Length: 170
Figure: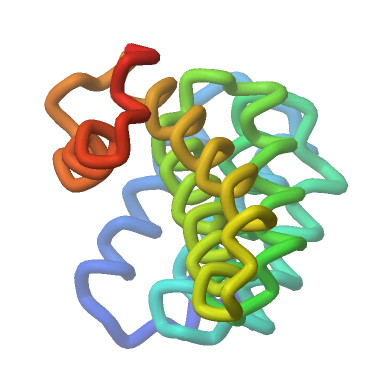
């Protein structure tokens, strides 16, 4: 049984019913409906912390979804799960795939920057400052892109950019 049919949460059930009604009224192919159903179930599972089920649904949705922007959001969500599971290299792959299709996704930019920053910080802790610097630079580049698109977001990142002398790039 699809997750959307077994969910006990009133809000999720309401969203599912409304999404299904809207989807039935829209003139879309059956494949698109199926892709959306998997995506919706993936989001529900992800919200419940059932990452394995969410990944299964997102993978099925990716197989069916043809719209590049919709695919980018699926890839972004897979990246979130990979990041939450500590699979940072895989998370970066999905975020970068998302950004190839949707280069204005500031959330994916921010998450890439956070991972780059984490890589650098760990190298600093190991007294490998020279190896850390390129990672800090990559974090800065991503945060600068995100801040250019959304200047009121990522205040902590903006402060870090200024405090480290990397702010002159924006």
